Image 1 (cartoon, rainbow, N blue to C red):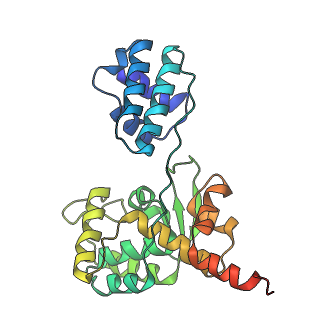
Image 2: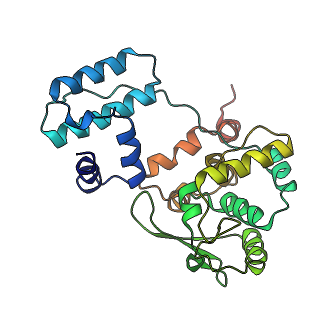
Image 3: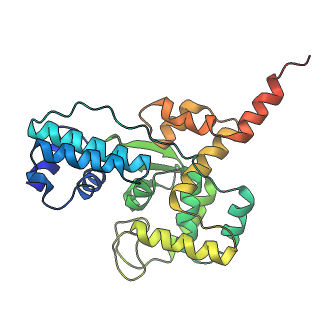
Length: 263
């Protein structure tokens, strides 16, 4: 039953594999045999408990899709979610982080992330064949929006990648592979790498998604076009990209100082 619901989420709702798995994890064991009353009972118990607004909203949608799959009635509005400000890393701490990286793979990995703003899953899924070193371009496949995209890459990560690849004597298809094998890096390993270097640099812990937001923030602060950023980040809607502008205090301050009237 769980596998059938997974196929429904993938096929009918067009959700990414990772999203489907996370949705299934939100439902208790054996819940794929629930009747309509059990679904609604679990929903209202979730709303009454001290969960985050985001968790409650996620539960709403998984139960809504489950009810649609089963043919149940689930005519409720999703609970409002409290939006936490997206975090980026200040440039001073980025420099401190880069200063303590001595491993060629880790330096190439982190520089590629900082200069591309890829989703962590996209970064770790990159294969050597996706990189055009001559033209400095990356092909990003298996994306959240199901659309491949080609993005440029700065000369600094390209130089770091060349140095890293020159030291490799294994046949891994992945651009960034584990030390003792040909498999690609897992997100948990990447998180650990950043945690170790953050501690070594004596800065607050940096996470993979913070590097994506750092690229986006710096791109906008440097006068980048929001439509170009939308394509680089792989967003399907410009409204998603605009969040990086609306939540950027420095950009707001610059815009205020430039346009504020004097009385």
